[in-house]
Length: 101
Image (tube, rainbow, N blue to C red; front, side, top):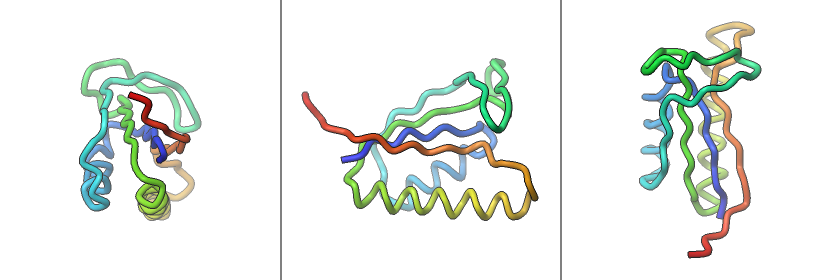
């Protein structure tokens, strides 16, 4: 299994949820109003601001993880093509995962 940690701006939440649904990911934990600073800038800490981050954690089989990563990679590339050099505030991290309880 893999644990995918998906960090994204509030402004792309509908796209992220659509990708999860497309790949039949029905179980996840979602954290709202996540603050941070990275390559796409700082996030606001105001509730429901378009520059607020969200984070999703989902444990999925490896095959699902790789397909989902490909989907997120494709989505990000398509979005960045339309925005020039601006990075889309979306990051996906894959971690080994073992359910112990």
